[in-house]
Image (cartoon, rainbow, N blue to C red; front, side):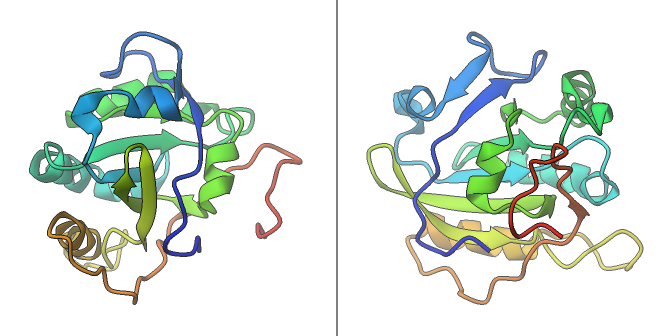
Length: 199
């Protein structure tokens, strides 16, 4: 897992057409944080996709999280799966997923998978919460699971782990160090592009 305290990696991501971001086809770190409305807000990065059953299990809970925290925290959804091997996670299906569940946050494509690698993201879904420590400077405070619910384990979905971390960051409190890794479908890396820790 990415060490706590790691700065937000730089990124250059493609905007999913049909979602709520307009304008340039690419979104870069500095472009994103140039919006004064974003200054001071924590940043939640969710590595998700359209086809994964673990993501589908949480789709409505992610919509509820967006409703509860979307005005307090900037949320970004990132799709990093290879479109070579998994075209079902392409822009059209991502846009349908966002529309179906009323997601208001930006949905972005990590086409070269560099951002997922920089986050050491392992699976979908995977969650990374950064707090702001200066203008345009962000530091990792939480990385791990949404909660302990999984498809088929009959545990209620409550977002407890992530919501506890969000509340701590928003209150300026320490986030608990005992953070459980997320579990889901492995990120589908481009053939030959697998990171050293994969497999």
